[in-house]
Length: 289
Ligand SMILES: Nc1ncnc2c1ncn2[C@@H]1O[C@H](COP(=O)(O)OP(=O)(O)OP(=O)(O)O)[C@@H](O)[C@H]1O
Image 1 (cartoon, rainbow, N blue to C red):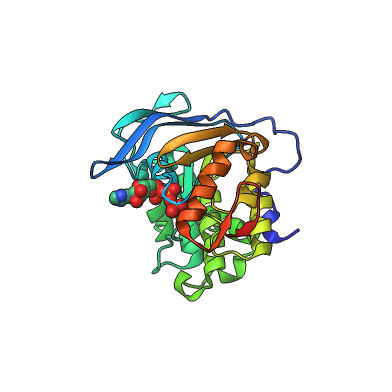
Image 2 (tube, rainbow, N blue to C red; image 1 turned 90 degrees about the vertical axis):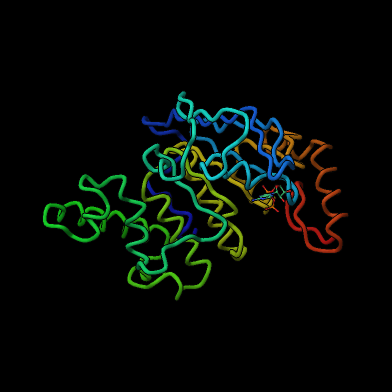
């Protein structure tokens, strides 16, 4: 088992005593770009401690819905409820305070900060004196700074990236940058982790380790996973929502979704439109079409 597979806080199949109760509900979400509907009346609930996959062919609306959950896109209609409270006019800057962490499709690390400093940004939720005073080691924050550094180093070690702590992100290979971005999200010990295509650019082995890691997080936190790699989604998700052309066409367990003819049809349609290329099917794996 590789380093990515090591759980940060909890291992074992039984949920811990402090199993999360945090539920994310998005209901009746509508989004249009320039009058063109990207999402129409979409609803999705991430149950506490579950890994929820969001899949669909290209242009289905996955990233748009993910961005709604992050506060990056504001829906024209619908409700977002987190821990029983409606989030109105959600802004990305509020996420950390709400116990929500995310990784985006692009890696999104700060280029002028070292890897360690980048991860410390993720840990600042736990700092008493605030991240910036800790980062710049103001006199009152020595203890905080020390604690932040320790937490950040621990997260990097768990993701086998501690050797890059003093490097700048731009000097590192893409898969390492992705591990650092994941460490930055996990160091906050979020109650909800939003992952947008975390497996893109990873090797088969790295993807397998990522799957083990995501699976190990279930029971500790809720996870919303947008991903094209079908075999990964089918392996790690408790439930899956399938979108096509901005509409929810299926939802259920991996087995239910795989057996749903509407899902197969949506993917086949996508493959025909895309022409001869390598695509993933809901049955898992990559298929030459
Ligand atoms: N900022 C935007 N402005 C205009 N149209 C947009 C914008 N973002 C997304 N769209 C459109 O909304 C629809 C849904 O796009 P979205 O990126 O959410 O799909 P997706 O399922 O994530 O696709 P992919 O798997 O290809 O990333 C598409 O038709 C897309 O062209």
